[in-house]
Figure 1 (cartoon, rainbow, N blue to C red):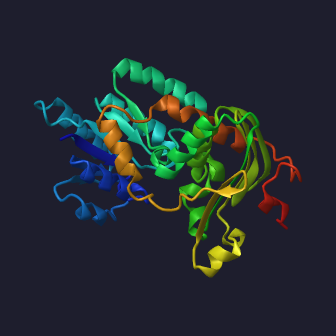
Figure 2: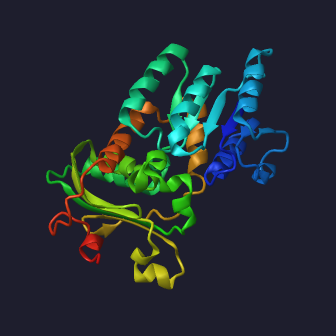
Figure 3: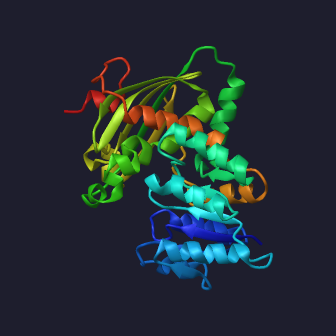
Length: 317
């Protein structure tokens, strides 16, 4: 049994990490979050030391590190806002733990180079939650592409619309310097998935980008990708609205829909088990998607391109 601590336990994604720690048979020792609505802990663990102030959490973890063998924290799970990931990863390694971090690992590709140096200095590991890589439908698609022997590039359309209200833009998520913007905050796991399946990035184009949506074109080693990401409920297709859904995700490969809408709730547990078994996705695995999201964030939108733009961009008013 391994000892875990978690940073950001009051956040949206934390329950998936709590479930993964519990389901893999491990122990949560300590948790921190500046907002004390953390009753979710009782669903998974009762004997957890919770700290509202990070400084007290830091002191407690350091005390455990100096105690007899068996009390130290083995892993720190990081569910904090995107712009704090880098600092919290560094904290984990400094207290002698491996870090398990939500996406995005960091906001800038050069931050990964710096973290690699700290890994080497501390002899500890940094893992990223790239859960789509363990989704059965995505694994099957990758195997199909790898064995198809297709010489021409695949044509791919990626669509992800997840409705968000006004609160989103008042929170840290609405500030690109903290969240990385739409492409980073809601798109980075799709960019990782696409490059994992279709190979290295060759070209990035951004056609439209604002605080609510972004769209453009990616040229990968084995695919041309038209992509569209949106927080605007008005972009939802009619079938989603009629079904009462506030989220819509779609991947078309050569016009064929890849169904992967189900099976998301347990993917974190699969990733955690892989990490504990000595595998998991490290910082090298995270690099390409971080770079893509960074390049999109800093790109000058070119405007809609009738040949390369996603179909939904062609209908935007």
